[in-house]
Amino acid sequence: MRGWLLDAYPVPEGMRVWLIADDGRRLTAVEAWRPTAFLKGPRAEADRVVRWLAGQGVRSELAATQRTDLMTGAAWDVLALQVGDAERFLPLMTAAVRRFPALEFFNADLLPERYWFFETARHPLARVEAEIEGDALRAMECRDAIWDVDYALPPLAILGLRLEEE
Image (cartoon, rainbow, N blue to C red):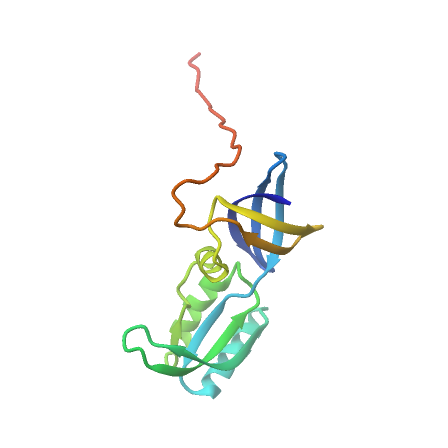
């Protein structure tokens, strides 16, 4: 389908997106997505985070990787922690930061919807081409850029309410 990406919000399986198709249909679908926090510190302590998340009913995975420190430009060895519940990512990471002080956490304080928009290079009101199968968003590609100043607007409806006195 071709249309516009209206919004997205986190659900346990990833991100639920809302779209308006060129023919006016309103559509919603879920894209599988797992937000990632980056941990710096002892591997044994990061393994404890994974076990703690499992105790909270959330699957997670650790993988060694490198990231660049924004302030110094230095490459750091860190552990990528993929969290299997996008909806609970922020409260879980907030609790983990307090519970595991031996670790430094990065990207753990990001709102999942903003993180997803940034990570996928998408933006609200973007023109998109999407492939939806049932309730699953299989693919979606932006057809414009966030910096465009002259862009097509979706066919939005306005609802107004007025309180009448008796």
